Image (cartoon, rainbow, N blue to C red; front, side, top):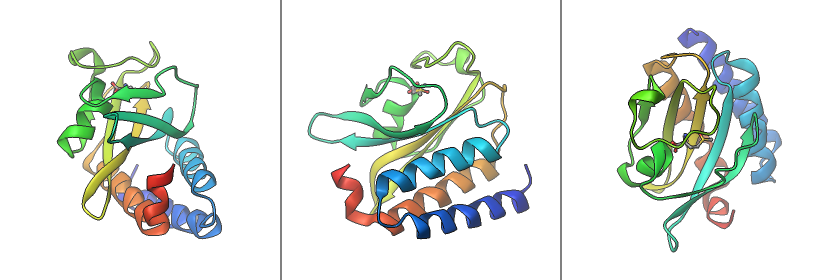
Length: 161
Ligand code: SME
C-alpha cells in the first residue's frame, strides 16, 4: 500500500467520524470495518481501552473473527505490553514472541499502536494479519493518525466506554 492510498483512507475515516461524531461506539466500529475492508493485510482490527483501576485492557470495538481475549491484563501479550510501554509494537512474526496471546492460529503478524488522550496512553488499535511481515512505517503512521482523530473527535467520552 502506498502513502497516497493511506492518505485517502485517512481522509475517508475522517469523514466517517464526522458522520458518527454522536456515537463513539459506532465511530470505532466503522473505523475497524473500514480498515479491515480496505487494507489487504488487515485481517482483524480492534480497539482496546485501559481500565487503570484494575490494570486491564478491554475490547470495545472490532472487525473480524470474534476473539475470546476481550480482557487482557496490563503486561500480558503484545497489547498488554503496549499498555505499559506507550510505544508502537510491530511484530513481523508472532512465533518469535514469547509474551504473545494467540487469537487465532492463522495470525502471522501484528501491529499495535497506542491511543493518547491529553498525552496519556488510554487505549490502542490492534491489527492482526495472516500475512508474514506486512507492516511498514506508513502503517504505523496511518494508525497513529487514526488514533489522533479518534481522540480529537471523542475526547473525554473515550474514558466512559
Ligand atoms: N495478540 C494479542 C491479543 C489480542 S488478539 O490479537 C485479538 C496480544 O498478544 O496481546
